[in-house]
Amino acid sequence: MAEATAPSPNATLDLLARATAALPGGGEDRPGQQAMAEAVARAVATGRHLLVQAGTGTGKSLAYLVPAALSGRPVVVATATKALQDQLAGKDLPFLAEQLGGTLTYAVLKGRSNYVCRQRLGEIDAAGEQLSLDGLADRAPAEELGQLRAWAATTLTGDRAELPVEPSPAAWAAVSVGARECPGAQRCPRGEVCFTEAARRAAGEADVVVVNLHLYGLHLETGGAVLPEHDVVIIDEAHQLEDVVSSTFGVDLTAGRFAALARTGRSVLEDPPATDAVEAAGVTLALALADHVGRRLRGALEPEIAEAVAAARIAVDGFLAALKGVPTDRGDDTSAKAVRAAKTAGTLADELDAVRQVPPGHVAWVEGPEAAPSLRLAPVDVGPTLAERLWGETTAVLTSATVPPAAVARLGLPPDRVDQIDVGSPFDHEAHGLLYCAAHLPDPRQPTFDAAVHAELAALIEAAGGRTLALFTSYRAMDAAVEVLRPRLSVPVLTQRDKPKPALIRDFTDDEPTCLFATLGFWQGVDVPGRTLSLVTIDRLPFPRPDEPLVQARREAARGEAFRLVDLDRAATLLAQGAGRLIRSATDRGVVAVLDPRLARARYRWDLVRALPPMRRTKDRSEAEAFLRDITG
Image 1: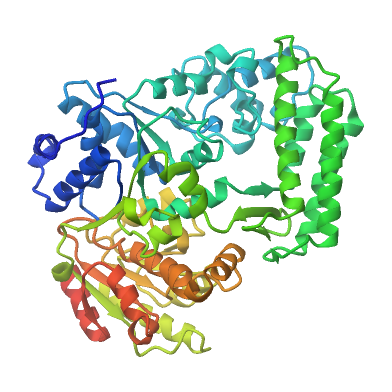
Image 2 (image 1 turned 30 degrees about the vertical axis):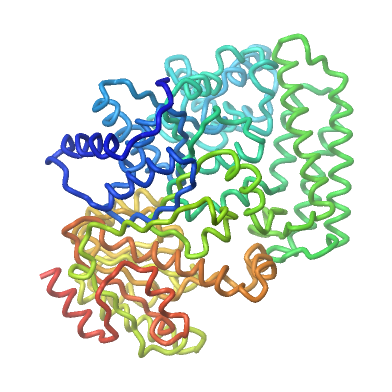
């Protein structure tokens, strides 16, 4: 690794200019990108944190990678989406390394469960030769396991992403292990040839390491045990940091975890009562949770849940006691399985202890379908945790196209050690985009609202000739709109229920008149430039549900500032993300139609409008229709 230096503004801008000039088509001058690159260079040099809002088209990846590459310091880039990780590792970093004459080194590091486990493959082979059972493998298709075995013999990385075909969940579960169960290289018979450990060694030698945001959260949760030491972390899509950290520092108990532990135990224990008790404990817990799905658990656990948790803890203790009779120092497959089972059971025991008495500053609740409920526990405020484990240890650059208005307070950033900038977007939103609010519609709480929304959607979609991404805040609203509009519209309508997300976006992109109706998972991560996407509609302002347990607890913690810090902050961020699907290139034109009249009437409307791209605004539907007809010809 090169000697650590502070990237000077001149050196940063010179390399940025060389890099952009080498892009296909010669690149273009982007003042926002230059301003961001200079700010990142200053942050790295001074150790001050930086919060950057960088609109679509800024070129923020190069804006933070260039000063990172020049710093000579170990840098981690954490991002929330696989698409951006692939772009960084497969396109941006190789390109930048070429501009630097090959002196920049980089690596991608993923969680353990993303790599095939050589030890698991060996155990499966041994079980097959001995005609014995192997828990997880016996549940997976034999043909798939054979294909995975053949692939594992030739792959250099063991990374699941390299597979030509996505494996079934059962097959991949059989040949991989997660962080909760892996004992580490030193206690594994095949630790020296472990794909995950090889990836970690490569990351330890790289200048820039790309990870997902969840893995970075686990790194913080383990006190820095997951990733190599680094001086700087760049958190892209930083609007998701709070929820990711809350999840990684929390607990998620399901019956499936007990069943998986029992299957592992059966391959090493000749003690059916111990393994059966663990599996039965999971079933009992699920039954106790089923009647409480969607509920927050305040104070002491409900008696039936408390009894199920206590019984599960006893069952896990019995399992651990039975495991003590299995030698763990022989270096063979049986020892490896026993060590793995003990670690999994120990983690489960710790989490059962955590939920028996909800710690101060945490919230517990039950979520998921009644057939497979989950007992969740999470910290309400991640600010103190981040202050202790991140802000005081590592220089952080946080960036997103949409930075939550209350980000500094919500994330616990030290106000005297953070700089904030908004570098805007190079796109001409005012000339190319129109924000239409259907101010004449009834209040969303009125029974006439849905019918009015359907009529509004029909008129706008016909004016656009299809070419619409219709975003909804609930499946109920989406399904109702599809049922009414599919027979009425002259253009095809796809819905989120039809296909997986990548296939839907591909079909939507390839057939220009098609409309796509979707819910919250499509408010971000959808990039469809060109006339195919000329209209984005949003049915309601995306305020969180009043009864959402974690959000409810955050409101209580914020007290008098609850609406501003929690509800309005969340709605503004998500609304801006949804509206940001429209203008994805310099030539894109279109309309964002918000069908919730509160955007035009409510006292807080300007907080929401200011979070949106700076488009022209109208309350006149005929103006929006004329604009759409002009675009689509």
